Length: 115
Length: 112
Image 1 (cartoon, chains in turn cyan, brown):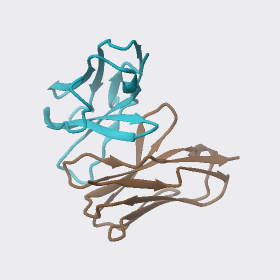
Image 2 (cartoon, one colour):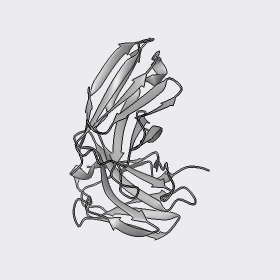
Image 3 (cartoon, helix red, strand yellow):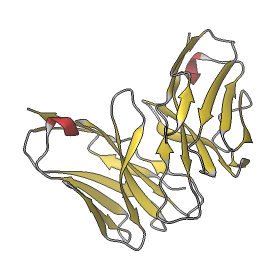
Image 4 (cartoon, helix red, strand yellow):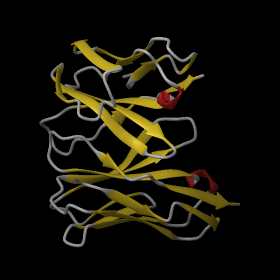
């Protein structure tokens, strides 16, 4: 298995532009998580899905952020409009819930820079 | 609200030394605790997972312990090597279907 795939790996954009981050979870996994990592705040959960349904989006900073999971093999995180404070590394992770022990498998991340 | 703290934030040791990384959490009603490794510019790799009913887990030179009642976990690395240099993150979850809450990590440098 190729693991969790994220694209793009790096994104540089200007303030006000729309940014779309993409994630392909591990085949067969039924939970997907989006995290954001910054020096100041560490790793924070933004939103997670079980069986393609958003379960908890309380970590989404504000209405500028939205996430979708149209099917079991694809998810997007969109920021519109982007701001410099959104600069961070965004990680996607997937897991197979219902079995123990369960662990989350992380993608390589997307490093976003908003100028 | 669960909070996870890792001390120290950074650690530098000579090669060959045994070392301990610390993790504490505020809500002892955890489901499991995981230790991850993160290399610069890379994602996270799970090292060890301890279920709430377990006291420790071992993998090679790594040993993780869990004391739920005191809200603490330690990661012991034996005979450290330069290749162990990375950031180590501790994370807990409060149920089988809730996300991980991470500490900010300990940045380890092992000097040859």
